[in-house]
Image (tube, rainbow, N blue to C red; front, side, top):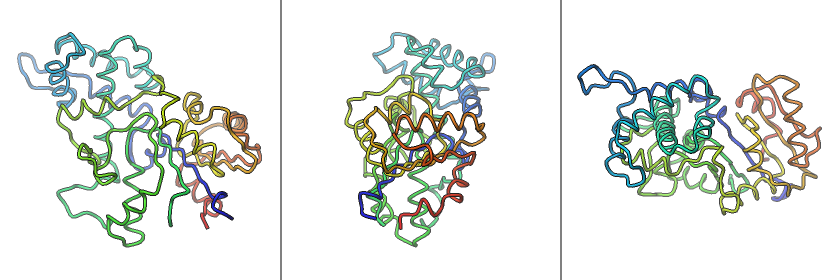
Length: 325
């Protein structure tokens, strides 16, 4: 098997992070609703409900931003509006899209996304308390990763796994995974400090001050906002999809907007194989997903394996097929 036959693309959705205890679906919207439900004791400045961090951030933004001509009470009303709308919303992304003409809804919604994701990272199985001694934490040039989540669980998991499994220094593990091409089409809650040495980085599960939390929201795109298809970033994602001989979807919902971002019709699927999770998805819906992938990737249906499995079980089922040897 020569190098050109080993190109692998992993596509990660929210379900992949769920396996390290990050919230998805109704669980996530409930957390966002709770964080934005800003309430105070009568005649008191003490918050009884909602997030102190979000309140600090909107006060800071109301005081310093020239983009919005409104006071902090209007931010609070926007937060409460989102909070009350979450139980009926498909997702926070959809809710922001429904109110796309209201910049306060977009800003407060993205603020809640950043706050909730960082809090969830901090509560996840991957978090390392920086005040405590850390756990100890080839070649991957033929692997590309497209991550549709805002969190950094994949990057955090991979560097820890390589360090633990091979008993390597942390810096060497970072050097190894730097060979990977990792894309977040809709942005993330920040670059991890060890990834490329950026001074403006955000530690995994960080508890941020108001200005930094607001800064993160500038880099977040909801899927209904869309992305610039002509950008070099999206071009690279589509190039990775086009060149992959083996594509593995993990925790992915196969949403038509995300599929359209990956595939734009320029695919030669003659020798491709596709694997994917579809946990707790009916057989009829799995058949529809298979037909969609067949159409978009050019892969023959008999080489598409969509399974009612979670991510870890998919790896157990296809361990030999996923081998790089």
